[in-house]
Length: 165
Image (cartoon, rainbow, N blue to C red; front, side):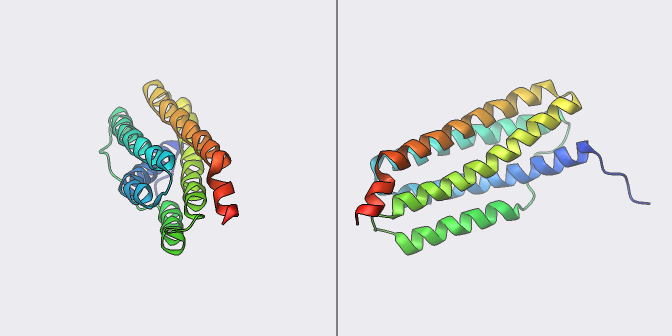
């Protein structure tokens, strides 16, 4: 008979999923920064790249807390979101709409990450991994702030620029 799956198994699988996703995002952010037209958006992507490096380190600490090796598992969701972003870069490169499209793509990534980190944080609480709760919460707060910062960039010009063309 198959082993009964528990929330601990879910936690570990989801941790592998977001670990893969963060590493994929880390590789994608420089492409997004190069495609961005506004200096503010380029800077936002560069800042998030640095944050993502820290988030990966925190995930490695969470793996340590649960006594597992840090490893990723292909995340189809992030593959799809990143592919959509690359499509925007190809189709809108050099146009006034590219920044609005890049912001929308980046926010799709942020929203995915926010759901994952929110869930992982709650599961870590249930499992009694208080050190992991703090690490996951720190990343959750960063992802939420990045999402808000991207909204400000969209509202402060990127969407109007896309329309004005």
